[in-house]
Image (cartoon, rainbow, N blue to C red; front, side, top):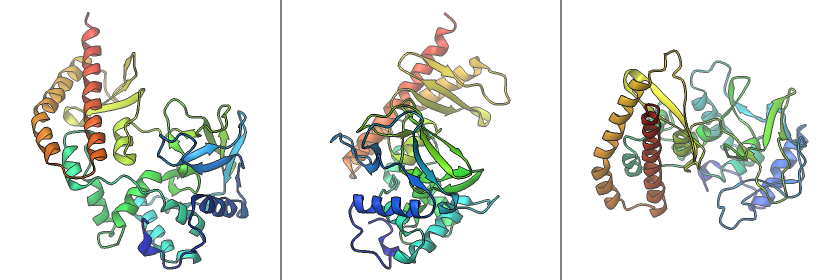
Length: 328
């Protein structure tokens, strides 16, 4: 189990997901919160779906309350903390060391049950030249946070990156809320403060359906953080010269270019730099094929990386076609 070395005292009776879910829900409600009894944390009814999420056990009406999470249950960084991810990771380590005596134990035992995506160095090399261009950032941050010699340190920091959210601009790990998965179109929950965090159904949700959140992140960041390739519609970007980052939305039928903040939109310049990026990607193709052929890791991971690379190239090609079309 992830972080198992930190669990000094574990309750042997808490071993299955339903038992962990029950303990988490009871803890939240004991501390003034609420979890709709129509919800469950599971893999859902589809045998082809293999990602844990939040599902409806019964029909949920539009505007029905899904959950109320008291803010004192969240694990947060200090206000204006310069390294909030480090501080939150270190706080979690301190709580993990307490085992079942930790106040947060019902949250931690289910948190550690869903490990983050972790690319090896060889896999990171296969992603060279692809956005978000920071595939080596985790290794650097682990050292900066002082987690280099901590067992499970990199996994813990990656988990914090994947789950951390903001409460009034303060980064926090929020129990239960961090179990929802992302969907850009099918999002069916909304949230607010009063002053607790409350989650509400944004649409009718049928029994057996997944309750989706929307992470407000672009497609490359979703891939690097969570390890999945977002279907259409998606949001891509590429880096041009002078630290200019060009974003664009891509759907099955349209390409929409985001304005560059603080600059006039120079589509001709964008087109020139896009073609340079596409050319560089093509030039790396042979090296990628050699590296992929030498890869001896998980074949599913190689398939994921190969699919991501192809999707990025298709996205850039679609953008190039859209820029050409404006002149026709």
